[in-house]
Length: 347
Image (cartoon, rainbow, N blue to C red):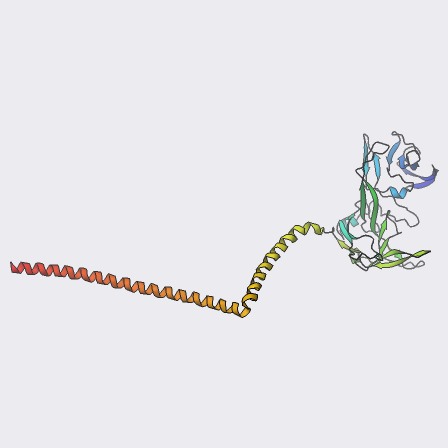
């Protein structure tokens, strides 16, 4: 943890003692960025250990945007948390308390959905559509996982140290678990899952009173809705009817368009066949179609019977012909023998 140690360049600076070596976290006015150095705000390469390219005087807004110096070059570290450890800040569990990452009560990704098809300006939704939150793999909070959704923008600018990020972090949403006192003077706590924006904090943009994250479905989240009048306005806590959480990553329904098209083609083909039958029924009538089917069946059976009868007749004729041929051959031989016998007697 970094401890406030005074002011420098009009901003607070912080120190951390590690292995008898001091480090300083301060705002560098010359470069308009936060840096970590071995000597107070000395931005020379010999003394600088890390810096955030985010041009912002608020240290809490530098999350996920830090370059760390290694012996030969700078490395971008997008997994940096900056927490306010006092006030509404949220402590993380100790480094050796990472059991939530092994218990796997939920997936490594969750889908946070706010599907509102109505273009109603009074909607309490935080966004429209689905957002996949990823688990933060470096820490737990109150023995529960932390999920984050990072919105980035493309970047082509090179910072003062010659480094260029392909993208910069525009905003970050967190979902984390935080028990809260039931009453301000009570020791009893109530489990809450919170969604905070910009930093891991109890200053939440949405709150779900539940112990199980998967119970935070539609009509379970309370959000702050601003109402503006002619001269003034106010903020009220209202139920968001659309915001909900589901386990695992969000499904991209656009990927299934081709499959849906194939299914639609099959349905169209079937519909065309059905339409053709309907047209026949419309022209000839349903009773006529039934009669035509019966007549077709009867004619088919009649043709089969005629073929059988013709085959039997042919067989009988063929058999009679064969018998006549055999009889003539027999008579001829007998007659020849008889003539020969008569000739012999005559001699």
